[in-house]
Amino acid sequence: MKAAVVHAPGDIRIEDRPDPQVRARTDAIVRVDLTCVCGTDLWIWRGQAPYEAGQSIGHEFVGTITDTGPDVRLRPGTRVIAPFAWSDGTCNACRRGLHTSCGNGGFWGTPGADGAQGEAVRVPYADATLVAVPDGTDTAILPALLALSDILPTAYHAVTLARVRPRDHVIIVGDGPVGLLTVQAARRAQAGRISLIGHHPERHALARHYGATDTHTDDQPVLPDMDSGSLADTAIDCVGTASSYRTCLAAVRDGGRIAMVGVPYTLRSISPEPLFNRNITFRPGVTPARTYIPRLLPHVLAGSLDPTGVFDTPVALSGLSTAYHAMATRTGVKPLINPHRT
Ligand SMILES: [Zn+2]
Image (cartoon, rainbow, N blue to C red):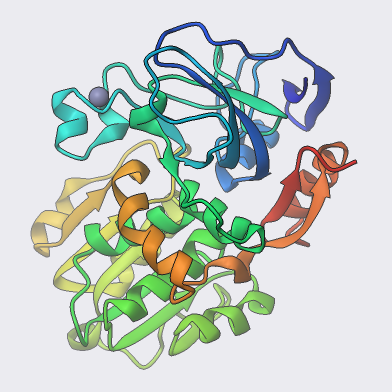
């Protein structure tokens, strides 16, 4: 099969790899129907996250089962959504809904695992990991289903960590796909005021469409009309850098909450002192996407939850490096990749 291979920062190539095979009784092989490039892939592309030369990459995909081990109940031909991590579904962590802490779990696109940016993926613990899409679902909805792999659950996890309540003032830092969908999730949680802070004013129209009441670039003072008594109830960091965290700390009121769903690759230390002095609750956390997918899927299938505004036009796998460039230079928001398109 063809799949993306990481050689070095800025050097991710499409190469021939062995077709994935069933190795364990609970494995399934999934043909990737649609995948995309995540902001966290960009950290590898930029050389800011650890990688091993020769590893695969990509962790978001929807696909179709082509083969299974003897213990798998899902049948070949079934369309499935893969959360960005696999999990056994039976351990204490999984039973608590924290599948990303599964002792038998792991992440696609890491050394030794298949990546989503390829034609097929071996899925461990297939019944526990994958979520089946109802038969007869229109293929036009595939991009919306793909959002359930990562970005849509992450937006809802952000709002959950931040405990957004009706009429809250929520500040969202970051105007990437997760930031934009977090605006939508905060709106659905009935936040009163939703302020988006991000570098890319061309994305702010979409933020307003999703429910942002006001948008700000970093060049502006943060919410200039605010005094210390009217800061936000909660700030959500969808970036995960020292700078985005500082913005959250400056924007949130005493007694408020800060949630972080941006992966903090470059954030090496956080002082507890301002959190302590101001009684601010800080809740960072990786999204247990597997928990959110069954909750969100009915709304996506019904069309009442549409995350597709963040996606750009699909390209073939051969266009992968163009997709990375588009994301790195911010000329695209989230390029889609159809690995079987030529
Ligand atoms: Zn588990």
